[in-house]
Amino acid sequence: MKENNWRYNEVSSYAVLQDCEQHSRGEKGKGLASYKYWLSCLTFLAGKKKICLEAMFGGAREIYHAEENDISNLPFLTDREKELLKEAKKQSLGKLLQELDDIENAGIRLVTWQEEEYPGKLKEIYNPPYGLFCRGKLPDERQKAVGVVGARICSSYGKIIAEKIGQGLAKAGVAVISGMASGVDGAAQSGALLSGGYSCGVLGCGIDVCYPAMNRKLYDDLIQAGGLLSEYPPHAKPHAMYFPQRNRIISGFRLHSRGRGEKAQWLPDYCRFCAGAGKRYLCSSRKDLRCSKLWHELSDSAGCRRFSKHGGFSKGDAYFCRIRRKFFSKTKKPS
Image 1: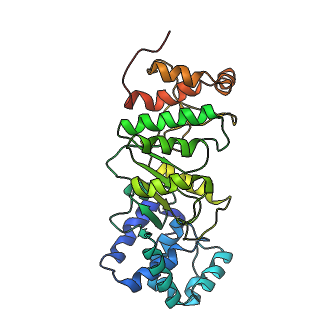
Image 2 (image 1 turned 60 degrees about the horizontal axis):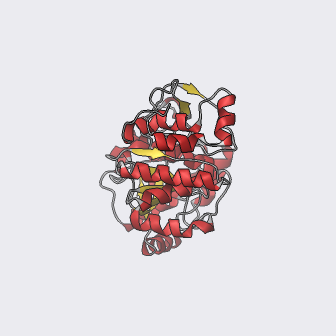
């Protein structure tokens, strides 16, 4: 195990990425890919811990062949994680190679953090995923992107507005990043694809699992005209803890790293839209509102009116103050 004089909690994720890249250049071959696949499938380890392991041992192959004493002495793993890692090292390499062949034949590719195709924006988040299982195209780093998240159980009104927002963003050349969930997420992504734009679905399950099943058409459309990605191994079933974790990836493709304004609590009975999941910032004034037709539609909702009464702006205010002024034509707000 390579000696390191830095501690896990004292180094940013990006610094660890830079430190570890020097150990990974020039590594090729099917055998090495099987080790990376093995490490990517360890769901009990966070992405940044896998990256730290590579930095300390020198690569996924070295982790697999590490002595148990070296594993036991790792300061940033819990006792439970150490035991699970020791158990995972007993997996057969032949089985790993067969599984890797199977996913490649199914059109699934694995992109690990040190490869050029890996999105650079994700390297800057607190807990970057070690590897991404992908189908279709990954988001273009040069294209502006907006994360759209919302209620799964929403009204037909909410779906119509979400689809219109997806269409508007797509026509403006903005990528729509969401979770392919039922309700608002799926409607916004469908709208983007209908307008010939790009959308990427970040899944909270295996890349070969269509969840929810009712979104099968959207799943297939994203593979053909957009993209799908997941940090979880193929065949992984949806799990409640996976969905909050995947939101950091959606926000990783954000338009801006930080926003200005006041944080506000979104009421649970109407759809939520924001430029980056988890960054729920609202503008402090209404002077930047423009699009009159959509402003009327967005404001004509009981949920939005209740939100305004609780001290927040309407959904139309929140959405267009953050996003609309950058991507839609400028018209005066209706009086």
